[in-house]
Structures are given as structure tokens and as C-alpha cells.
Length: 463
Image (cartoon, rainbow, N blue to C red; front, side, top):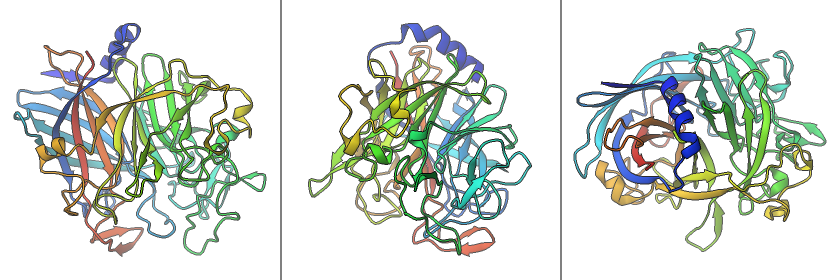
């Protein structure tokens, strides 16, 4: 039996970083798929769901296949219009699946093991409510709910070797450091260019007011992250202690005020040797993928997650919106995992671009700046691969049609002595808590569809 740990990964990274292969990782296909039912309840009796972030805890190869455990991060709770006082939390899951047969994807068994809450330094649970104030009680000016809690819309999670957790969010956007049990240790805000500004002041609202709360004025920030487009992706390289976060799409001043021009987003690279004193090392422009819809209109695929390979390279997951099971459209036009390469890109950290000077006004990149590069590795919409598990992208619009949002990734070794650098990529969906038998924040709810939480497992070769 072969067992994986974060120490193993750090050693592997350290030994391979200098000699990382220049060739593109090879996608060997979909090998397993697992589901959790849409109406599943968590440890607090509320509807489970929403795989917005993932961090693998352990992984092993068995005589029959693979077994592992991971953390799955839900976001701010079920909401159709506005937000609720959902207590933000983390779910711990286990997974196992047999070695797949040729041409078929194995059926993975998923199990919810436990749920724990995220709380501030005083132990008060954090809330999914849209921020209406500045919370000053935790050492840093943070998004504040009407209840006095810290407002948190979590989107990515990294488990550190000591068991503590780094979590990124949409509202700040911010990076939070929690104990292994979920109590806040510290928080880090990004440069001013990222902070949502209204009328010259920081205003963390995402224009999703809670019950009885007014809409922000103006509804959209004038600069900084666009509403609901915060730090969607985050990954840690344990060999270099580099923590990288990526904004979901461009800041308002960089073309993020329009869906057709929001493709020049930004990545921040921090030295996380001390997770309570992050040091900004680099900042890069990341050109998000674009695609054309049925009418020939060019749209932007916003990014949803970031992960680091054992050779130190980064994978970025980007997707379209409003297509898939549970929403109106049946056929997604873009869901892909791309290799993200900062080599040759311009480091703009500490420049005027960290203030209010746009790096890509109206979506046009400043000529002094060279962006990072993206190259596709996995096309999640590939129907030939999805068919291995009885899934599809597009009609018929049913529970076998992939749901809209795929937002979390985890990477583990394949433990193949013939191909020792092969890895498995776990990708989970954010099902938006959609179920016809929902219950959260003391009330039942009924969505229009039952959307299961799912995990897709792909195999990549890094040779």
C-alpha cells in the first residue's frame, strides 16, 4: 500500500522543481466519478453542497484502487435573491474507488464525515450575509455583516502542514488563516487595486443584500474587484512556500465593468513562510480564455480554481455561466483546465498598477506589460470522456448533464511505478445547494432542480 502526505509532496516538489518538464501534461482521461445526493444534510442538519474549494488531506493506493480524504469548502449558502445568515463552514469527506476498467470510469464512493464552522478570533461564527459595514474587531478591517459577524464568502482552501487552513474569499477579496478547528488567526487584504471602492471608500458589499438591507450605492464598485468576482482560486507550493491567489475576473478599472472585456485578471504570489505575515512577491496579469456563443458574441470564461502540480506548475480552471443541469441552458461552451505559466510575464507588484492606475483600461493591456500564458490540459466538456461515466454536456437536459459550476480541484499521485510522475486531478462542482428538499438557516426551501454534488477524477501524465 502506498500512502501520500503533504510531506511527500513537498519532497517531490523540491526534487523535481529544477528539472520540471517543459512538455505539456498529457490528459489520460476521466477515470472515476462520484456523487453525493442533493438533499444530503451536514452535521448541523442543514443542506450540504457547494464544492467551491478543495484540499486533499491524505491519499493512498490500495489493492483494489484508491482511497483518500479531503476538505470541501461550501460558499455563503443557498440564495436566490440576496444572502442569508448562513454560518460559514468546512466539510470533511472521504472517497474511494476501484481501479477503472478500460474505456469506463469507475464509480467513486463519497462520504461526508464531519462539518465544522469557521469563526472569528472571539469564536463568533462567520456569516454568509452580504457586508454592510467594516468589521474592526479582528486586527484587520474586514467585511462586516449586519449581525456584527465577519462576512465571508469562501471560495478556495489550502491545508498547511501544521493542519491550519488558508481560505480565500469573494467579499474582500481577502485571504484568511484559520486553525485546524476553524478559528481565525489572521487575515490579509490585497493591494488597493483589488479592493472594491465606492465614492472613494472601501465598501465590501457584493450587491446581494440580506433580509431588509438596502442595496449599495452605487450597486457596482467604481474600482477594485467586481461584485461576486473575488479570490476564486488559490494554491500553495509547499516547496517554495508560495501562495498564489487569482481574481475570478478583471478588476473594474481593468475592463471588469463589462462581461466582454473582463479577461485581464490578476494573480498575486505571496511568500507564505509565515502565514500570519504574508509578503507579496509578485503580481501578474492572467489572460482569461474567451469563446464565442451561438450568436457569435465573444464572452469570457471566468476562472474558478487554481491548483499546483508536483513539478511546481499551476493549473487554472475556467468556465462559462448559466449552462448545465439546474440552470436554464443545457450546453456549456467552455469548461477547461489550463496550464498557467508566469514565465516571461511582467511582475507588476509594487508599481502604480497596485493603486488605481489601470493595467488594462477597457480590457486593453498596457503595452509595457506582458501577460502570463494559458494552455489547455483538460476539456471537461469532452462528451467522449463523459460518456465513460454515463454523463454528457448538453441535451438531454437532465441529471446526467453536467451542472453549471465546477469550482474546486485537488491533485494527488497516481502511484504508478511505470509512470511515477502521473497524477490524479479531482474536480468538484459547486451545486449552489440546489435541491427540492432544502433546509438552511431555520427554514425549508425548494429549488427548481436536484443537483448532486459530484467529483470527477482525471489522470494526467507529467512525463
